[in-house]
Image 1 (cartoon, one colour):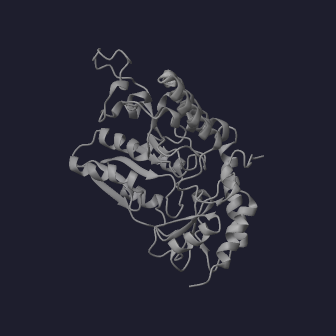
Image 2 (cartoon, helix red, strand yellow):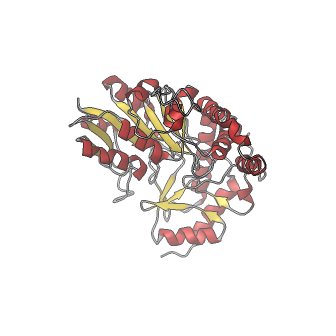
Image 3 (cartoon, helix red, strand yellow):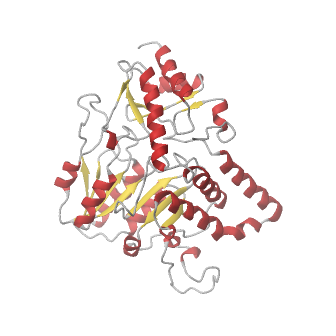
Length: 386
C-alpha cells in the first residue's frame, strides 16, 4: 500500500532513519521543487516569484485536505515558535487571566506564554502524572485530564499544549480536551509539530482555536518551513504584533497605506516568505500525506514500532507504553548508559535515532520497513552493557 521506494526516500540507501521526530529527511520531490525554484530565479530573476499567491494557496489547499479544515484558515510560517509568538503576543490578556500548559512543554510552546506574565497573566503548569507506574521516575511523562479540570477556573483563557510530548511521546486526546475547552469558552492552542503527518489532526472537528507546527519533522518538508491554523473567531481576537507589506487588502499598491487588514490566514504572512520551501512542503503534503489516510499512516507507524518491540530486549531497553489513545509516533525507551554515546554508536552503523529528556527515541515513519526496525533492535542488542 505505501510507496517506500528509494526513489522517493533516498536516505534508505545509507541509513535506517528512525529520528523522524527530529529533522526528518526531505521528500525527494520536495527537494526537486527547491532546486527548480532556485534554477528559475537564476535564469529569470523575479520570474518564479510571480507565482507567490499560487504557491501559498496550493500549500493551504493541501493542508485543508489533510486536516479537514478550511484552507483560508492556514498561514505559512518559518517554524512553530514564530506562530506561537504571534498567537501569544497578539492574544487579549488582562491582569489575572490564566494560561494552562504542561511543565515539560517544548520551549516553542512555553516561552511565548511565559513572557505573558509581563502583562499580568498567570501561567499555570500541569505537573507530571505517571500513567505507566514507576517505569520512568524523574523523566517527563504526561499530564491528566483530571489535573486539567482541577486547574481550570473562570479566569482561564487559554490551554496551550502539545498534541504529542517531544520527550516521552505522550499524546493528548485532543477530541476530549477540545470538548472540555469548548464547553467553558477556553481557547485551545496546540503545538502539532510532533503529530501532523504522523497522527490524524482535525482542528475544526476538535474545537481547536489555533495550532502550529514545523514542516521538517513528520511532514518531510524543508527546515525553515512551518504552518499555523487559526479559526476565524480566534483570529479576530488577535492583535497584530508583526506587520509588513503583505497583511493588507491592497496588496502591491505599496503607496496606499490604508490600514485595511486581510481577514484570513494571510494576515499573519507579514512579509516575503521562502517560496521554494512553501512549494516543497506543499508537494510533500499533496503527494504523500493527502495520498494516504492519516489513520493508515498512524497504524503503519505503530506496526513498525511493534516490529521493533518484538525484537529488542525489552528488559534492557524498557519501552514507555501508553494506552492506545495516548500513543504517538515517538516510542520512548528507558535504558542505562550514556544516551549520546548510544546514539553515536548507532549512527556509526547507519542507524539514526535520537535522545531527549532522558529517553532514547525510536521514531519510524511509514516509509521505513521491517528490516530497518529489526536492524535497529539487533544493533542495540549488540552494544556492550554499561
